[in-house]
Length: 231
Image (cartoon, rainbow, N blue to C red; front, side, top):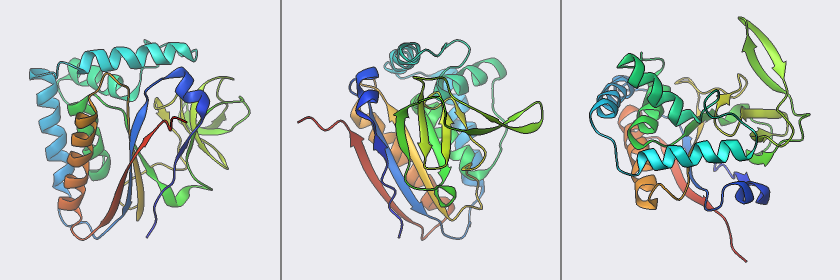
């Protein structure tokens, strides 16, 4: 079985003291209940419109501060959780995209936490959260065409040996490692700052793993907390 070993650069902790994340490695099983993701997404959208945990706004505001620290403009390129919530507030709902994507978007909405989902089989080497040199290639879509872009120097990026997998920390995912329900080896990362209580981060992880187990009974998964190791 595959356990993903993600690493965080010490420079990242300087930008975001107290950053911690849940890393969830998954070996898929046959899809039995695809509706689980869409059902969770619908319920999460309704929850966003009716109830907000008291720590949610401070958590998203802290992410905006962190984005500014590495030169991103959070109003133009907000963290993924903020972008999802704003979309639901504006439109009242979100269309279903893919059972797996719907499920992790539901977790992100309900817990105001950035959640990334990756097809880890497409990786070259292990995921790393680092400060960009500015030379790492990022595959994306621009004006309907595939294109290669490069991060700004000093930008926080997720990457592997081949290049950027997610720009501006958790703002935009690349094409190469994009996850869908067909993937057999999945990796999820739930990213939090100290404004989100640790027990809520674990609760969010449990919502994701419970949903995956309902969707694909018999899957294998492993959950690990990543946090700064103080010497």
